[in-house]
Amino acid sequence: MCVGIPAQITELQPTGPHTAVVDVDGAQREVNTVMVDDEPLFVGDWVLLHVGFAMARIDADEAAETLAFMRQLGSVYDEELEAFGLSPDA
View 1 (cartoon, rainbow, N blue to C red):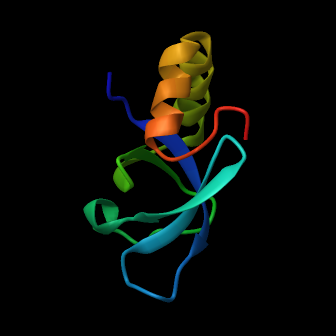
View 2: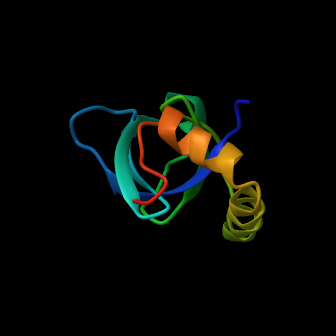
View 3: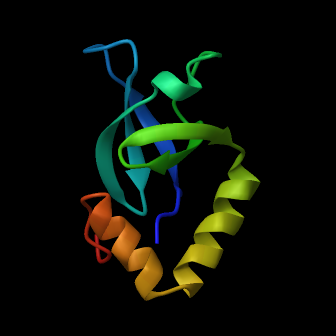
């Protein structure tokens, strides 16, 4: 199953115009933001990630609700974190 994971932008990278560091459940990773660069991104913004790409902007309430639901899914959430290259225990 493939799902999008809510992540919060913690840093905008100067290495490229479409690069940011995001936090996913305590783990940080660099991602591509080209699909959501129609408006400026800011540290603290929330995005929905899939396969290393920010696919959409989401607000903080939607991110919290989605993360709570995904944690209830247990192994499905853990599998998506692993596919993202993160440990579920990070």
